[in-house]
Length: 203
Image (cartoon, rainbow, N blue to C red; front, side):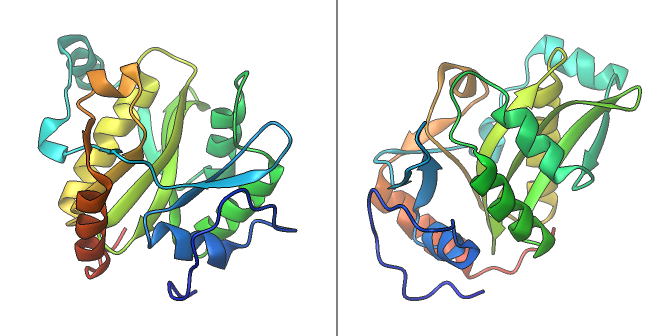
């Protein structure tokens, strides 16, 4: 799938959330979210939230959890299940159309999950889209203490090992701020995204 000829649009309701359109959008710093009626809006926030890998904050209690190896960490072993876990909340933009589209991107090697398992059960995870040297984090969930945070630490280490230079978290939340997420102007984000897309980082 290419990343050319994407035209910025707002309040678009395509018959289907086309995977190629989604990839083209990410390559220009734009991402989709659905409202409660299923209408798809396209966003390019200013400022944009990112996680500088060196700024990841790992609390003392989180370090202890990681050290105890309470969870088994896997990647890409239950992508759709992770998406459904992220969607299980009162308000969510992740509907069946999104699950279908991003699962397809996963099969194409463009969307990935990091998962926390305990006693054979999926207890936390996160997912996102990887293009070049950029990873666009979409959502995370947790059914056990610190499970999603452990996944984020594992993801950050994975991205560092493989040479990724941009970790996009889209928006800030109080929770993400405690983990070290900061904001940069959209113009700066787009410049860094262009640099990241020149790379060919393996997963």
